[in-house]
Image (tube, rainbow, N blue to C red; front, side, top):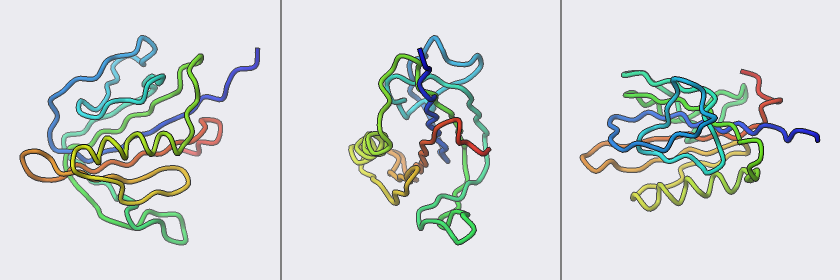
Length: 147
């Protein structure tokens, strides 16, 4: 049987606090973790993750320049980076389905979608105790990844 292309879903976030815990998948790479307040899309496991106490990230909230660099806000704070890979037997969602899933979650929390581009999107929502949560999601097939 021909293997399905592995689908990589990356979630990078500049966030300031976390309290909830996401469910682990048996296929998660050892010593990786979800963002504690942003639920993963069903059918994915974590291939790689990193959390830093303080970093900065430029969000493509205004698109990209001619060289492909993101244009938009630079946010600093606690930073999560999580690579999700589609489980082998799981249904592969479309990029639009992934974007809409996170858009709906951010809208329920009083935020929303700031920018959508062919491989992803940028979201923002207010945090309950002040401040903002920003998120970027990208979806690419692993075979095409250049990083």
